[in-house]
Amino acid sequence: MKPPSPLLVVDGLRKRFGGLAATDGLSFEVAPGECLALIGPNGAGKTTAISQLFGEIRQDAGSIRFNGEIIDALPTPERVRRGIGRLYQIPQLLADDCVLDNVALAVQASQAHSFRFWRQARRDPRLVAPAMAVLDRVRLAGRAGARAADLSHGEQRTLELAIALARGSHLLLLDEPMAGLGPSETVEMTEVIEGLKRTHTILLVEHDMEAVFRLADRICVLVAGRVVASGTATQVRSDPQVLAAYLGTEAP
Ligand SMILES: Nc1ncnc2c1ncn2[C@@H]1O[C@H](COP(=O)(O)OP(=O)(O)OP(=O)(O)O)[C@@H](O)[C@H]1O
Image (cartoon, rainbow, N blue to C red; front, side):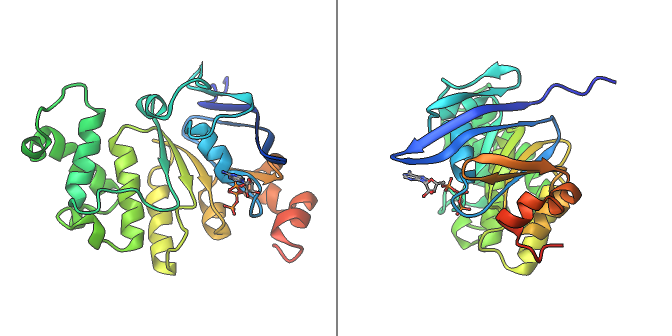
């Protein structure tokens, strides 16, 4: 059987900051429903790559094809409209609004029909029902009425994920979702992301190797802005270049 066309094709992406090449001929593909992890040492260009995919940093060269179309010229809101969602290292939320309102607003943004006044519309079942379904999926339904600002850091990151889902993102760019989380929150977040596999395509940038090895179908190792190795967790773990450049010789 013919393998499915990749959802995302990154081809020769470059970005220089002064004399420094943050991405330097970066190429990889992600299949629909796949979870691909980008790992690499600090400064390898992982966040720059995510920002380029999300349209926040324009590449100097190279191209990005998403869902069969070149999106190089598209601004971020148009990329969001086409189904790309990003999680930042620091959650971006409406801090004074409740969890449900944060997600319902994202549902509203994704729906064709518009509501004139958000304050009146936010209890509309056409927004609340899909918002609660998303919260249920990320295990945050029990916190629907809490102020976003009052959530734990882990819950805030999960809420940000819920917002991306509610907007209809099918490619999720997750930039260090485990950063700053304690051990139990890391397990919780790993399970939530695991629950999104296959229905969503995931590009995961993460330093927590346990989470990477559990979640990723494939791993690309970046060093100095380019892929030096890629493959399954088992292949990458035993790659001599990876051991030398990133995981250290004591890696399993
Ligand atoms: N806006 C910027 N201006 C100048 N240099 C930048 C800028 N953004 C990133 N860089 C540099 O580009 C290189 C790649 O940075 P990037 O944040 O993409 O790496 P990273 O792999 O995500 O690192 P980390 O794992 O520490 O988050 C680094 O040397 C960084 O200092």
